[in-house]
Image (cartoon, rainbow, N blue to C red; front, side, top):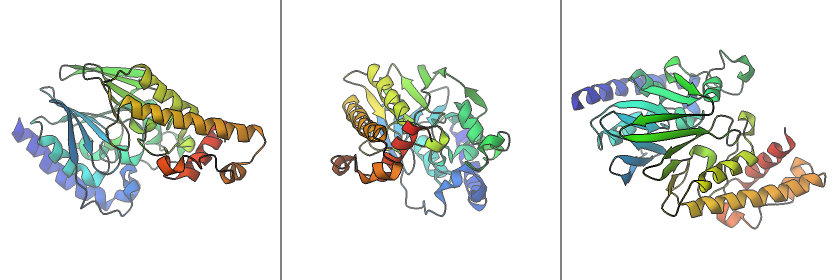
Length: 306
């Protein structure tokens, strides 16, 4: 099996070069001109056949076994070689499935490379729509057209279940949250969740209101996982270190606090700029303080519906 995997690996090297030449048109091009040469992929073993990979962009989940590698998100196109090298260190099998937790390029940028190498890409229907504005004209201007090989070939609405590598992998669409196409992945036997960007550990989240996101949905996503968690649950966030339910609970509580404060200001007739000027996160910024203004504006916009 290793021979066929290395064959795919060599093909990927050439594909990466092609993607870099045409990066401006691809969803994965959200890297712009960032230099990825110094990025290292860190592999965290959760179980002997289940891993979390960290590099630049969204955290990756990886299930391995005789059926082939099952990947959750794939970061940026220029990192595909490094990601495949990390996978090759723990399995001889090729990547058979790529599940995208949502459409953003730091989670889908490697789709084209992996799709051309034979992986089947799966995502919520709204991920397909947002990566494919040539077909869905209502989204033109919000997202770039992804190459055909980068598009999901299997989509779902409420959820889907995989029986793969001896595991039951449960995927659930959580409605309007970080975007309108978010998926949470659960490995019940391992007691592991991958939450995509519905969870940013230790920082204020990016809520993409323009892609259908909203603060109430992000809170609901956190509660969805907390209700199904136990003391030993491990949670892969979209960004940040591996987390526990306690980390997620602290995150949920922060979201609820800021939502309540912003809702009160909205009820008093404050404009978006006035809400920002009121500093509803002021006492929280020391802990959560990455982009507080962006976060407050997203909470305001998701509450007022604009």
